Amino acid sequence: MLELNFLGKVRIKLDDQDISSKVSSKSAALLAVLLLQKHKKIDRDKLAGYLWPESAEDAAKYNLRYNLWQLKKLLYSAVQEESFLIVTKTTCQVNERFLYRCDLCEALHIDIAAEDDVTKLEYVRQITREDFFRGQYFAGCDELEELIIMQRYCLENKRLALLKKLVEIYGEKGQDALCLSALQDLEEIDPYDEAAAERRIGILIEQGNYNEAVRYYQNFYNKLAVDIGVQPSDALKRLIGGIGKREASRSVVRIETHCLQSVDCFWMSDVLKQLMEEGSLCFSDYLSAEMLSDLSHIQRRLGKPSVPPSLAVVADAFMELIKGITDGGNQLEIAVHDLDSMDVISRDVLQLLKRTCGEMLEIIEVKE
Image (tube, rainbow, N blue to C red; front, side, top):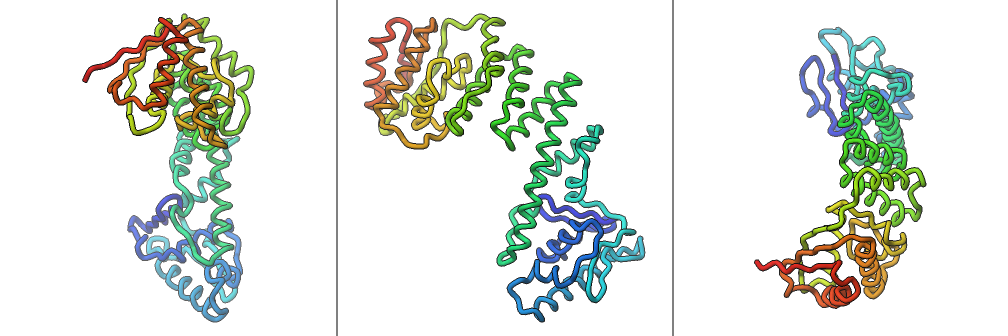
């Protein structure tokens, strides 16, 4: 049996012997091109054009001839008594009678819609975690590079469809942990998929994990609002809004923060971070998408602002958030470490907040 792995680091084994070190990167690319033809013959001149486009014609033909000779000899199986390649004067192809497995072919050829075997789907999920020819670059081989990029694109789409299939299967079986794992991988490919976000939040709510549901919604809302300038669907808003009917909102929100005098707005940034991690509040309940974008200038977890706002605008958005939280009936208790080291901007903002929020905002100095 010949085992060919092109996803991630190239690995080749023949009859249980690892021969990867004997196959050059160009030879590995040659094998991949042949395998992508699905056992069809490919013209030798075309192969030379893929791999040695900048060489003179005679040199390119010689390089191809030498690599084919090496591969034909190297991929000869004494067990099967034949070689993996069939080479003629003008063409080359994979030997259809030869027993082999190729991760690239398995990933590309699986019929996701028709496949219900979870073991097979999970196998393809595992192998497609890695890129086709990961970290490889074939300088000057533009056509080959385009082929590799196209296959990576096809593999990503295949993985996307596969993960959605697994989400459905695990969801129907009530296997929440496996479903959440598939949703996590799905988010890495498409971070703006509202159906996936709705499924994930729904599972968290059913588990009673309300804080995590709110935290995830907050992060998802920020990605939509800040990155692409859209709002979540009404269905998603209703889903997260229903949490309040399942569990009474907390009246006291407690966080711990730190100060750094040399960095403008550091304490404000830490407050935002800790509130997001605390998880019981949705910033979008108190701020517009524009204000969220303004705050992302000092807290990267909120996204990336297209145009950095002035610090006055940032301070205004921060105060609007804190005032909105306290006006909404929540008492906010903020423990502050190193209070004497608070940066000037944060200190001024805090003094103003103390006057406007009154007893609903309590600042607790922590002595080290």
